[in-house]
Image 1 (cartoon, helix red, strand yellow):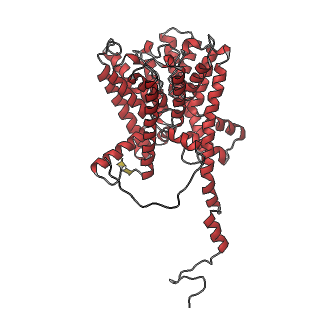
Image 2: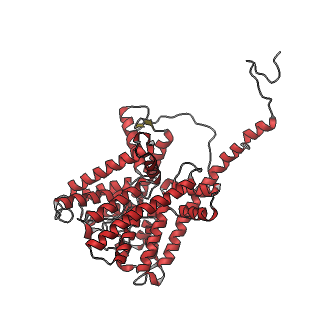
Length: 478
């Protein structure tokens, strides 16, 4: 006879408790409750991030409407466009930052750039950390949604690290620029400090706002101005998780995570590729690189290839570039920089995943692998979703703007990609667009800063988990 509480193979078996089984089935255990509650909390955290950015845009718009911030009356659309571009760290402008805004207005723009670069929710959580010296689960989830960190346990250290990295990078670049402005351009020390701080913050935040009407064109051959700004753009565009890992494991690259390895590899490839592409495409263009010396061409080509990372600085006239160069620049802008940083675009990791998926399919490999790691199906779906949604977000506004204006397709396409990828480079048509088209760019900048997938998930009113799987189907493809 089988003993009570034992299975047929003789192993001990715990008595069945109907209440316990029911509790597990309903997900009423602490683990089950957490699994049910966290998705909803994450959704609310995402909504708070969206609301935070929207609130910052509204506040920035109201501040820029104050008469003391401008040299002439500012329209609501001009204030809204500038505030959105600053908060979304884009750099597209409908008024000249150097001449339209007073020093007070420029301070407001700088604060909006800094807030957008760090993330509104990151700033709010940092303030709460300073006041309360602790973080609750809700605050951690909000911060995790803003900084794209993986776990909630490390958010406190992540936020403090973000603040330290940002402060150090911006301070170093600001110091270099200040010295150069004061020594080489005979600026008063106070003016040099302001110029250095503004451009350093704008570069690290990948914003591209400048205090010169023609951006970096006056410094096209000055490496002491251009290279620190490029460095700040690249570092800010790597993403905070990569920067943290580089700080911890900079002497042991073999121990880097797959994310850091892909980001560093793709960043190097795109920087070199962009540089060579710009040199080959614009070397003899009399309106861009043509009149410069060979060292000047090399420097200007490097800046032109690096700024689509995604900062809106330019040291040559973008509007004078050849059509092929504009198309190549648009591709670089669309790819963008690293995840969880200040750069926009679909991100280099997304692009890398798509490349390895295509390569694996061409070779007939069952798995998509990169750097000795297999990409999970979830990562592949996410990359495909981000890319296709971004393509749709480019095509639809381009069709609308082309059909309702006299602008050429290449100009409109470049402007739309620049807005969605939060780059800020322009052929010079932004201020000439109709109000409806400018509002469309405002929406694109907002969506591009938060990300199509992140915005859609944050605004979703329902989350469903399918409890069954349908039979497989294999339609013909291609």
